Length: 240
Ligand SMILES: Nc1ncnc2c1ncn2[C@@H]1O[C@H](COP(=O)(O)OP(=O)(O)OP(=O)(O)O)[C@@H](O)[C@H]1O
Image 1 (cartoon, protein in one colour):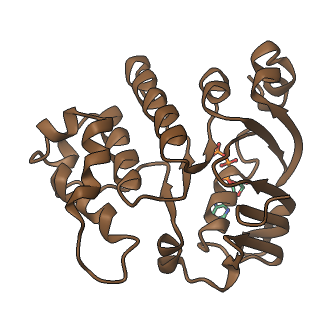
Image 2 (tube, rainbow, N blue to C red):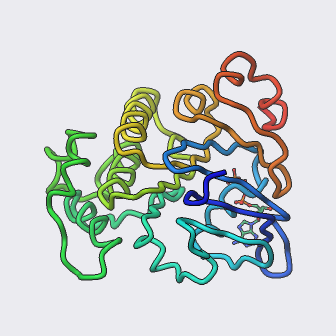
Image 3 (tube, rainbow, N blue to C red):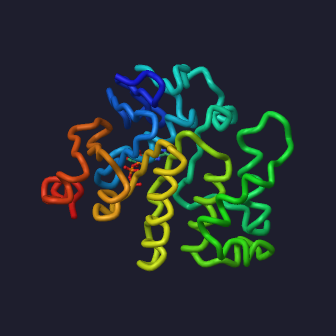
């Protein structure tokens, strides 16, 4: 059993008096690409927010690289090598493409200096970002903003990348482009990924294993090749 990956054991968390995650356990091994599926409201985003310390862990344990994440402040999580691409992207719309990317390089550093070479991965992955580096992020299309948000996470050189529905509402040509980049990146950078995504076709291409979350617990696990053959059981739980 890996001990340096992300190891979540029986965690509970939620909002106010309400419990969303109840006894949720999973392991994402170093370099593993793990998909998480489940119907609306099942607790997928809550899982990512709990990993990031945005919601407190009420019980259970949450460890990454052998560290207890419940003792790490949210703003220090990036220094452990965890990057997050949230739903809604959270770019700075009045900043340029390049400025948004520079902010990604600041995230993991104790010193407030940027490392320009870190932007290469962004421009190599999505070459149009270089051509539009001086344009305002807010003027980009939704699909372009999503590519920028992913690139901003990549420039922080994470060892674990958390992605919340990166393909939601994106036009098919850009979906293909993003999944191509993530596939290459996951392999070449040996970055672990935890990807929440409803697009099962893409998820089976990107991930090694896919977990099904229901009412705040992992209730099933599929390997990608098994799901490629037969999506019906997963689709049943996802209400597709
Ligand atoms: N800020 C909040 N305050 C209170 N309850 C919340 C909050 N955010 C989410 N919830 C509730 O927590 C439950 C899980 O929500 P979560 O966003 O984790 O689901 P999800 O699986 O990501 O679904 P979706 O696919 O719709 O994003 C839902 O019942 C939701 O209404």
